[in-house]
Length: 423
Image 1 (tube, one colour):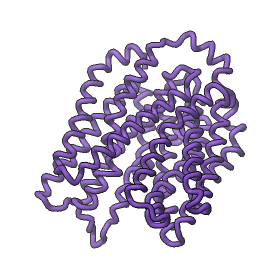
Image 2: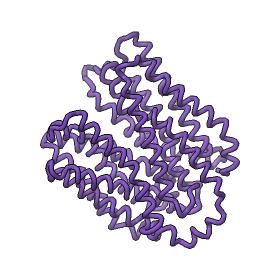
Image 3: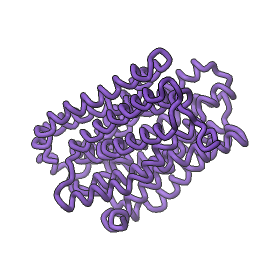
Image 4: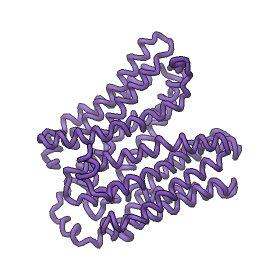
């Protein structure tokens, strides 16, 4: 463990880990309160609140395309990260204290913040390693743990403060979190990140010269692999819709004399990420030392297979209940398998983009990765909305089948992709 976290990786990785942790703390802390704030404080209808929420989260995943392009061509990733953190802090404090009149402006600032921040910080992680692709998978797994540490802590802190003292305290605490990340970043970026991400990649002659050795077909294969993430996200993002409803209405939440709040199940995934990410990072390194580590494409296939297994478990559990509520331990098991699946795809995908994307379009290609999240999230919401009209088997079996079909198709393509990409 010590070898993975201290000796194998540059210190800049851990700076980016903590900055990303605080940014995700601010984002998820705000997001957990946003709809309730619109309904209870701004007195919006649930339909209007839902529409605004959907537009907001959609633009959060679309605007990194603009931020990635600006970073690649004009500003460099580091300036965009700083701008994103500033915009996010300003938006959150405006949301906390600006009132109804400035509500939409605060959302606009946070949308801009994500556009500047989201893809560019991931790009800098990749730049830290240059052409050393062997360590990128474990590096992005560690980085990914920072995302989930922030996601785990934020509902506990921001949600509690909002419940006890008012929404403004919840939003302000999210703002303080982002401001903390910004201060840490500015104090240590020059010392720990060197020149990585400081200038636009278009001005980096080292990268531009390396472009002549790139095979243009790799970009096509990168997009092909991105397509396989869409069914993954459709299945994974059921956590916020159908799986939450399943926990509410079809799970016996009385455990050892205590009624488990439905929302607590949402903390299982980030909690498992925090626990499992270091172990899986070590596992990949161990396999690499024995020349047995799966390729990135093979890890994608493992992820899709495990995702299908998680829904098969859920279907079996529901049928075993015979119409009665099931033990919460079944959902714990489902989220555990989903988390292992996620760790085989999401951080590996970030690493894959940094390996395959043409250098001059690194941040833009990283943004395209997040665009697949947007597509998957949108379709996941549509399907999860059918919870009331379908039985559990009718709802979950197509998800298991879709993931397994994607797995089989990717298995067929593995030899070709491995040979072409030389991963």
